[in-house]
Length: 155
Length: 292
Image (cartoon, rainbow over all chains, first blue to last red; front, side):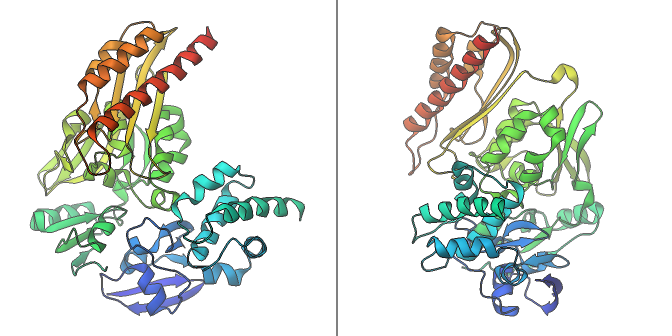
């Protein structure tokens, strides 16, 4: 089926099998491998992207369902600079090790700060509870998100 | 794993969708948010030959008053229901329940129609529908019918919906007479976002310490969401105090027979349901005592 999707601001047209999921479309058809596949069942969160401004599991959407939508991946968020402060704090506080969960963690955390600029630690933990990390033990990630809120306030 | 092959149809009208359902029946599967169906297909536990994408059906959207009822379209996602001011005013139970559904990315895509049609025993919306006396709207080429929640949920992943029917909306009584004073939702899960071990939805009128028109629905403790009639009977029309709480919990423990499952023994789920009810009623009692 022929689809047309705006990915990170760019019009992408492609012919895809109907059973291809959005994560595979982004990774293989568009060449954006920052979106990761962990479980393909919606639990781990590594595939999280933004579709029409909403956090969605790319592994649980068909590429054909993204026809006519606007998708933002970690590459787009990075290039736009909108998560630069969060990325810097993640880096400084060692909120990543292997980096597998990190793109989705950043996109997810950025949405929290968009809707709740001053979350509590508990609110951060609640919000990122759908993003699994096998390396850090989460503490540094929560610290980074909390510190990112401080920084925004100062600047 | 990847989903097995299927034919994909995205009807542009409700009538066209109902025709497709009538034609394909059991071979077809409706995809709404896909947050339950896609995992099943990716794990190859489900393999419909025809997938009907209903996202093009605007008739399935909307949250608003419809006569003396609050109507929520089947395609409304959990996040939007949870964030709705209109719902917070009229049906605060739903506002309390929404954050318990999965995780934020799931809530931004998963729909109430999908949740009700799937009828997972641990789902939040079916229990809320029982507690609030909701009616579920089903449409087919044969017409439209409303099914009371109490008659809709029949067993594990089993509902009153026929294969050629589409779940199009859910309606809740919401005129002033229907509005409850007590709207409490509690759930217990091992980790945030996990399927519930047990959960409850409690709706009631309150006059001082006396609860009436009590509706108590449980999730995660049977093959479907259930009303706890004995526990409700133990509370109905009586003054809430420590003894009443014990009686209600005892009644609940007596009437529940959770199925055994590998994750949690039946006795554990039953006990946790009792703990949840005790905590919920105890905090309600504290609130009642402070108000007095």
